[in-house]
Image (cartoon, rainbow, N blue to C red; front, top):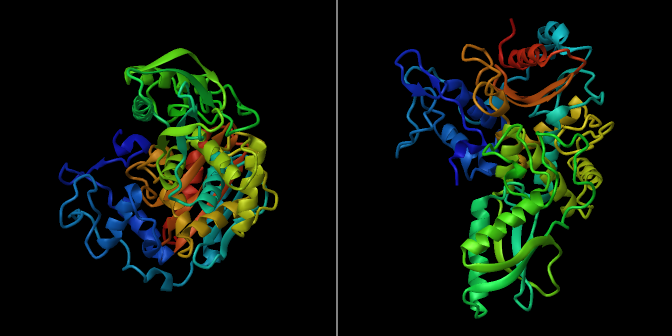
Length: 485
């Protein structure tokens, strides 16, 4: 398994005072502030690994001065950064501060929302997550093309239906006569060569138990029937997404990247089966012929299983890196769990219905896909901020990965290069980005100067250049984190 930065690690910045590499204290402020404003987030979990574990350490260290260097933990806990000032109030006190003044916020945002760089149409919603009160809104209920911010809806629905501990299984099934082995895709786009190697070893052991030495011979088939409908996304072929199939290895990438655009396989399921055949041969199994697509024989038994990372981790990876392949997989997993067909249409129905169950405003929403690549997608800013508020709700701990997966301004994922060290928003903004030609969006959370957690969504269309629109969106989010001027 690769290091944790495979899914987008935090950026380390150089401290100008002593030349040592320490975490920027604002990253600690953002993570701790999220917990402070959400109230019972820590108690609710799920704080089991990765980024969530780091945030728990920050909350435990709330009475210390400054931020913590997460790269070198000590037995007694994170060491404080001597050059950093104290960050936020003690846990549990932030929600006692008065809400932000809505009139003052309108005055602050008004000149920023009308800049030409955002294009001809801008819609926005800013709410206090603790009260649900809308502090600012312009076109908040207007359906807009969201681009990748739709992944907030996709991941929230998946977590709501399946839970953060759900794992996607890939299996190998052996026919009753031990002559046919079928690789059965479960819909895990993160399946790896290492996983196939482990499964091949399990399958070889099972064949040897049947008295074959060397194991086999077997015919290899592969099953992609878990998904239905069109395999190609409407924008395909495209380097931003592979064919959407229930069986693939490393998202069908034909290079060693794990995020961003890359040339993709035209037949990811067939490639996965051929890779599995090669691993079987290395494990001592004689495989005859080329793999062909077929379902397992009746009464076949499972002889090898690989489980994906927990859904919480997949959600965080989806949001941090804006991973289109995982997003589409999560939409189909939601469809399967809700009894819908695992297709674009079935996923749309399933996700929309689950959002209704969450009690968020879905009027005007059209979820054509799970990734946001389809220009037919429509959501409202009010829907996105409502979902972020649900994820911050202490009574809904299972939705928390929607927040912990959001990129951190200037540090991680798709916001890693958007904010500079000197920017006032660096480390304070956690938000999902969205970019299509002429469409730019930003939706996430920020702890305001009163210590309250705000959720925001800014959706813009008609922009001429992402280079102009993105700084304008970043300025809007940053304004929420700063005192009124």
